[in-house]
Amino acid sequence: MISVESLNSCGNGCGLIAALIGCLGFGSFGAPLKSTTVNKVNDGQGPHPFVLQTYKSAMYFLTSWLVLLLGVEFKFTPWGIVSGMLWVTGGACGIFGIRNAGLAISVGTWSSITVLVSFSWGIFVFGEKVQSPRQTLLGVLLMILGFIGMTYFSSSTESEIISSSNDLSLVVEENVHAGLSEPLLENTQDAGKNESENLEEGDPPLDDSIGGIEALVSNKVQSNDKGCCEKSQHMVCLGIKWDRKVLGVLGAVVDGILGGSNLVPMKIAPTVDRGIDYVLSFAIGAAIATVLGWAMFLVIKSYKAGSLKSGSEKLPSLHLKKIFLPGVLSGILWSIGNVSQILSVTFLGQSIGMSIVQSQMIVSGLLGIVLFQEIKGVEKIVCWILSAMLTLMGIVLLSKEHKN
Image 1 (cartoon, rainbow, N blue to C red):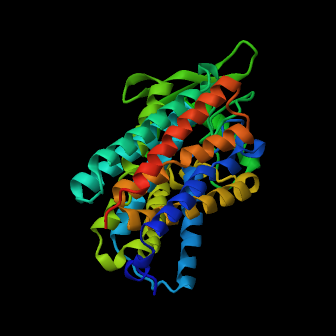
Image 2 (image 1 turned 30 degrees about the vertical axis):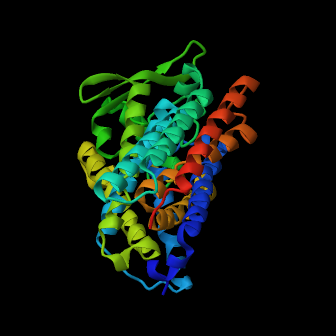
Image 3 (image 1 turned 120 degrees about the vertical axis):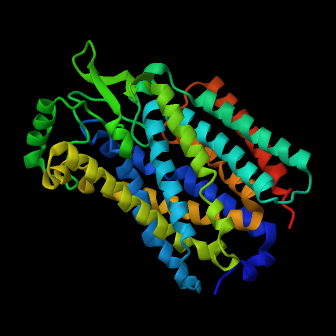
């Protein structure tokens, strides 16, 4: 059996290696979702946020059982359900943020908040010891300054932000209609019928809804001068008119708070259920939370449609034929990142382990520069690199601060 006790000899070295692998997994999981095929589903609106979350949850659940091959004894703690709830809710809000505020701003926002929240949990609640409180705080501040810099210098123009929206970007094309009125399993024969029914009922397209937000957010589609459609810059939530970008940033804030807290239940769980033994509990909890999310969708859709059958036909589509492979690959990369994050927190603590893993932004940024040319202009790229170096300096400081 692999446990925290049997791995303690690794010490901080294992924690740092796990954090590095976590950065690579978390920083690259979105890359498969950059494909044109993924961007074009839902008439150019991209997959529904909870659909992308479902792919991540499914692959994490399936791949997590591989830890049994390492000799890990199967154990389950109900605290895993709490972690799963926090992660699934936060993940969906994060995708909502990306689709409305843009990738760079959303990732920078939730990374900074995750560092602050996880640091606060570790130091002020769990009383984790560090070598030097001042140096630890300096490391955290350098990381956050680096995040802010990378966010600023990788931000798109306002028009690019509005037109970007899938898990990494959204290609807005002609004829953008109601993206959530598709059946769970694609059925092209009924697609047109469902879409026309929705328009007749007067329901606004709610392509950016997440769970209960769907019933509260009005998302209008406007036509531009060229005759194609693009997203409105405003959304109505709880009867209040919001700037779309502001609401997206709020989604990223929620993701940061929940993301910085989703491994807190592991710290509360009995000692024997922590570390790598917690992987399966987290996976089962994530699966339960995802199923409950779909059940909530079904209830909302059925209530609006007047019957369970009609409601099920209007669930967001999984787009199995179009995004199955990218979704699976994305989910596997995320699974690698999360298992590594659990190990990093186990060895380095909530305050330091979780903070270092948030440097995933460096990996995603480099992929954006090298593969997708998302950051253009020598000046911007140089400034982004300097910001990344600030983050790396923070990591170096934090890597020496964990005290057993």
